[in-house]
Image (tube, rainbow, N blue to C red):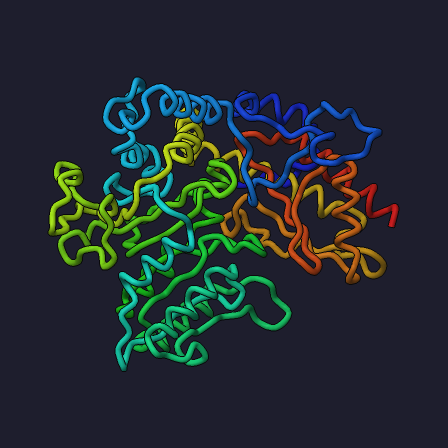
Length: 444
C-alpha cells in the first residue's frame, strides 16, 4: 500500500470520515486530560491525545466486561469455574481457547501458539529449548541495541553454558552515522558466520527506532545457514502482518500489552513451529502442558499436548486471559491485522508528512528533531521515533506535550516515540499532536 504524497495536505476531518475503522475508537477508554496530568487550562474530562500504544495499549470496553465477568464467576462458583463456566470459558482450557483468534495475527496454526507466562520468561524457555551450543556452533546473533531484557537473556544463556558473552554473542549495530540496521549487513553476517551461529534472534520491530526487520528474508538466510531462528515480536504482534508458519520460523515470543491491549503486565505468548512437534518434547515441563485428559490424574510421566500448548507450565490467570480475549475479539471484528495495518500505514504516513513539514525537522541550528525511523512504510510499524537536539531538549518537549494533553513516551536521553494506533487513534489526533509539538518547540 502506498502513502499518497499529498496526504499531509488533506483535512484530518475528511480522512477520518473516510476511515472504515473509525467506529472502533468508541470501543476503548481514552484517558482524560485531568487523569494524565495535563494543564488545568484544558477540560479535565476531555480525552487526551494518546499516541503511546507502542508502550501500553488502551483498555477496551470488551476487555473490561470480560474481566468483570470472570470476577463474578470466581465469586459465584469458586474452583468449579475451572470445569463449569456459565460463558463456556472453562479455566482449565481458557488459554487454548484464545489460540484460534491469536493465530491469524501471527500467521500460525492454532496449535502453534499459546498465551502463557511473560515475554522474558518465554524467551528463556525458548532459548533453553533451542539453544544447544557445540564447540563449532555456539554463537547467538542479535542486535546490540535490543531491548535490555533480550540482551540480558542472551548473555545469561551464554554464561549458563560456560561461555563468554563477548565471544558467544554477536551483537550487531547500525553503521556509523545511521540509526537502522541494514538488511544486507545482517545477511552478510549470517553468510559469513553461519556455521558458528546456533541461534539468530532479532526483534520483529525494533523498540527504539521502530525499524521493521524483513523477518522472512532473515529467517530464510538463518535456516539456510543451519541456524535456529527465533523472533521477539513484542513491538510487532498486532502491529504488522506476520507469517511465522509459512516463513519457517522455529520459535517466537511476545507480550500482549502494547498493540494487543491486554493491560499492563498482560500475559505473554509464544509460537513453536509444528515441524518440531514430533522431534522434541519441551525441555522444562509443567503440569499445564500435560494432556488435558490426564492432567488432573497427576500421572508420573509427562505426556505433553502436541505443539506449543505442551510448553505451558502453570495455569494462567483467567483475568489476564479475559483481558486479552476482549482485544482479540475486537481485532477480529475490525477485519484482522490486514485491515488495521492498512489504516496504520496511512496514519503513520500522515504523521511523518506533517512532521517533515515542521520548521523544526532537521533544521540547521537551534532546537530540532530528526526522524530516525525508516521512511519506507514497509520497513516500519506504527511508531515514529524523534531524536531531539541539543541534549536536554527532549525532556522539555515531552513535558510540554504532556501539559497540552499529548501523550507519547521517551527513551533517554533524547528520543520521543509517537505511535498512532489504528483501532483507536484518528487523523485528527495526529494533526493535533504535531500542532502542539510545533508550539512547544517554538516556546523553547
